[in-house]
Amino acid sequence: MTRFVRFTALLLAALAGLSACKKQLHPVSVIVVDPIRHYYPVIQGEMMGVTYEVENISGHPLFIQEVQTSCGCLVPRDELPIVILPHKSGFVHLEFNTIKNTGYVHHYVYCYGNFADSSCIEMQFDTNVVPSADYNHDYEELWHHQHENGITLRDYVDGRSSQKGYYTEDPGESQQQKAKDEVQKAIDQAL
Image (tube, rainbow, N blue to C red; front, side):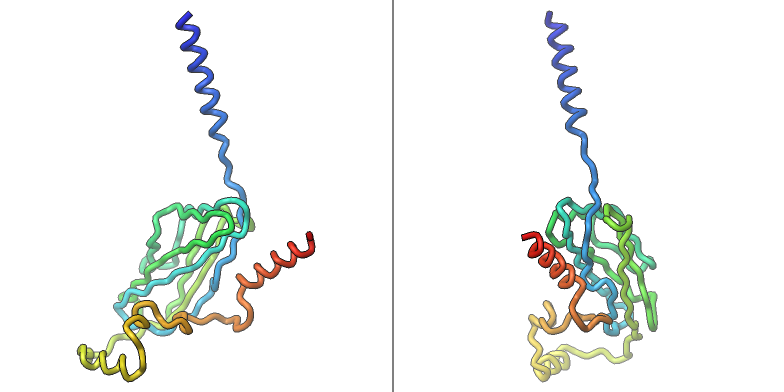
């Protein structure tokens, strides 16, 4: 009798385990905030951080499985997969090493995941990499420059709220705001 009870318990446990494994990735709609950017010039040899905000506007989680870049000098900083919960925003962080570039550079970033329209989204940016000057400023010169322009240490660390560090082609309403307006319009019509 104990053999029968063990066999039945094992069979029930296996069936419960198999039925619990029905996980499926659903297609997800996203909005990338400013997917095409033009950064201001940077000095050759500096590390430049590039961060894209991705907003999940659907009811299922987004899984970004892979991030590919157009150059080995542009490296993703996030561990994969990047998971963005429903109706939340997440970020794709990249680090651009300017040491191997001079002049105009244009880079592409491809993110692969469970996107609704395709398996990939594309983001891009460009900048000019300028060789550094032979003269380096000392701390006093930097301090005077900082106080003459009214820039605080917090501005250097966090950046000024009025400056993003890049600009886009569309000076009008952002893609994110347009999508939010469309969702609100659909909700208003449904009510």
